[in-house]
Length: 602
Image (cartoon, rainbow, N blue to C red):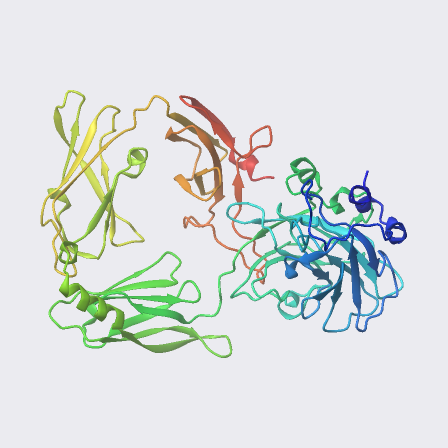
């Protein structure tokens, strides 16, 4: 066994060998600055052969402190941000290379009587083959003892429950709610690819525990930029540091067995808080007759909006569900539109003291881009520029639940849905008219849904005929005639999943997601026990997400740090074997019972 392989195998588990290793390395070691002349490719990562201060050393100087880490070959720092000191200082650690030695130093003095940990995970690689150093945490103290407690846990996204890599987990001895806003923590660490953390060598005392996706990397919570997670209660560590403690060992992130076996004491769910400071942060003239406003905080309290030169009854306004953005259209074709729309918004704006006060904001919505586009378009006017544009979607897999979905490019001022014709065509090509209902979306005034009144059948074709000039938009343009055809899928290889939900006592949103959990394939809102059908599924892997929607607004409401309110609960259904993934085969019909109350007890 070569020296390098020996050190690679035994160094992480026998820290005492650090003192002996430099004595074993003689002048016969290869000069890694000499270009290779052939042979096998080096796949072994660098190995530490010397440290100063030594692991567990006490009485380390607080002034002009330097940490020297010597490797068995020449290395480079791939990610300076991964050289992480806990407790963190005002500025991140700095470094320089001196031969095979990495020198880490600081712009300010260390605190006295403090246990520090310096972590190198994902920071260092060798020069030749860029083999990443797996990681090491050096512990030392500027006092006369080393703190010996450990806190572990996992950080996840509140919506997808996926682990968050690189989140900063922080402990505060200051138990005041304001501590995270005002000063740096008493201990901190970064999460790994599993969202896992172990805050090691901390004092045996009471703490508040937080996690941040820290945009500015300053270890202080800035609500406008950062995401946050917190534990509701004050905690006290119960685990003690040990060289053999699995939670403190460095693992290959592909080692699923060992990574998942680590004990996670705390689960933190990252969310973005709703801003509390209210003001208009963005305004844009997006068309001759249209504009878009964005507010910093949700639930904007707008008293009135008017545009100079246009009657109030000519304005069409639409807020989004969160009431933090507003679309505006002017339904007036009699006047020539000015280059600048002088728009006035009466709303409650946050003043310099942090209080909401009535305020009238004058917005000058210039049409430079719109004007340039208009000049260009006059040279090459397209048919859709003079047409009431509408997109009609009817997907075979979704038409039973979602029907025919209409979305107009602009608000319409005239509609004649009664003139539309929905026709069913049976397998013998016989046509029959069908009744239908039309509803306008409560959140989008340009969107409508047409639902057949009869149950759709496999083997039938359904045709929706939209005649010419049955819709007119605010530009005065009429629609073209169009026809949309759709049939239910009849592929024998498609499968069906029925969720049998019991013990339902609140409002819930049930989503079927793809395996990566980044796309909702089908969604239901429920208030009582029921069976939800998910037909026409292709063979593949899926996840079931269930959200506790207590206020029935159809959203996963975010949390509040100062109000000690966690985001609304989200659960993914887990199979008996522990997997969150349903592997659905071809041509199968599955019935999956889920006890909702039991699911949300965990």
